[in-house]
Image (cartoon, rainbow, N blue to C red):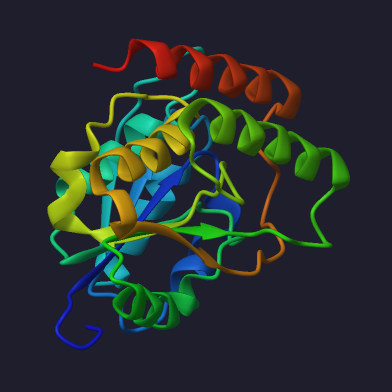
Length: 231
């Protein structure tokens, strides 16, 4: 626990079996539960995770193999949010890039600023490839123009929020587009109770699942389309 809060860590996984044991072993003790959701893994991620589940009482392993065009990142996150029991939910990738040990600092900043949802921004950053930074800046600009939201990291995959806000987020996107959707909806429905908190990205374990140009174009189109179909 962190103060009065029970904290759940939610991590979608696909083909991450090689480093799962080390990742789980490094999770800080203040997390009350760790939820791993295997999504369309073609290696033994699910089997390795189930074996770890027997060794780590806090670990819960789920499977959600739904995909859109082969991607089920959003489906896995939504499954984890539904299953979580904590008062605070921390969503993070399963590749070790996000500093899940920083959660106490993030929660303290949320308290100070009156936030119910914090999106963890990696920018500005010198160690992220320039082409990725330019892609994120393009999406940030699109969001500013279409939604009036100034954001530094439209594609951050680490979020910290109160479980009570999950129904207010109205999440529907089962693929990578859950990442911009969760931020846009949090801003739309929570107003100034949504904000960004700075973090520093860590080195990745394993290979990326992203096709950056293809994913970026899908984000660009979805962000524009979503602006004009909101009810």
